[in-house]
Image 1 (spheres, rainbow over the protein chains, first blue to last red):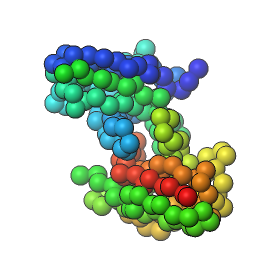
Image 2 (cartoon, rainbow over the protein chains, first blue to last red; image 1 turned 120 degrees about the vertical axis):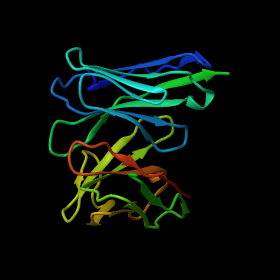
Image 3 (cartoon, chains in turn cyan, red; image 1 turned 45 degrees about the horizontal axis):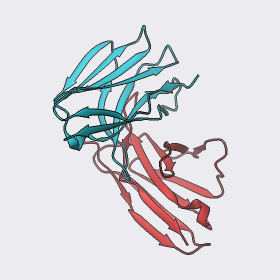
Image 4 (spheres, rainbow over the protein chains, first blue to last red; image 1 turned 90 degrees about the vertical axis):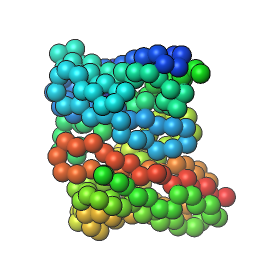
Length: 112
Length: 115
């Protein structure tokens, strides 16, 4: 079992729709969770951080965390073609190194 | 806030050349910096973790004598690819984080092409 799992996609949604990206993780005591967006040929860009159960909203983005189910998701409202990218879920490794364990990423395609 | 600057953005050089890449945190003190490599259409691969003033910790399979890392201050880390060969051609990306369980902030990456 991979430490952080994501569906590779592509997830295709029409412009204006809600895109829902999901991620599961294996280490039950993980505390910090992040979503990064990576455009093709570019480096990852931090979209959201979430540390406690529940929802966290920032503009069109909402991160949801359920530690009991070991599940974290990212919702993108009013999806735009410019949101088309690969979205990486990342979890802090539970040691002093603070390494990030990345999922393989979900490719999102927003159709005009 | 949390800006990480990486230079150069692109390097093209001959086989056998050593290449130095700089990573700077511009508006925060980076307790830890990380170096990644990414091949086309593949996932990020962590190469090493560096803490200011101490030796870098390399991931399994990464040659420490090939990829020299220096973390001289809380705002600067460098990666030197020594005697680079075509198989070292890749996208190298650094990241930095503040103390505690904070996110990593990434530089723009360096595209290295060895002829």
